[in-house]
Amino acid sequence: MGGRANQRLSQNREEMDDGYTKIAWVVSSAQRYTKKCIKMARKEKVQLVDELGFAEMLFSVGILDLNKVL
Image (cartoon, rainbow, N blue to C red; front, top):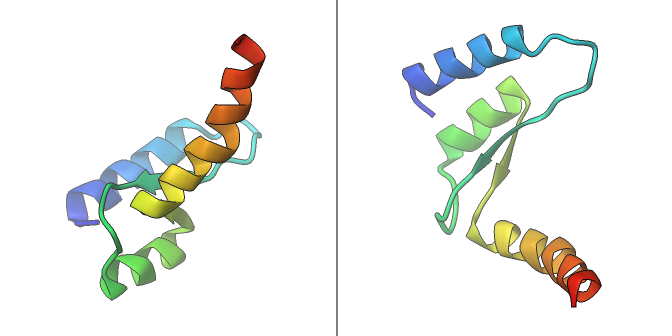
């Protein structure tokens, strides 16, 4: 996450201050994140989701919802 992304994240957090707990996410099709990115995400309290994590989320939630529709 570069300087511009960091700036937007801070701006979005300020605009969303409505009393709810919010977690910023970065979802990527990348296989892994760099150590620098992981360090920055921890500092900024951002949840990183890589391609495998995203696929697992889709399977665990998405397939259950598909069964309801069918």
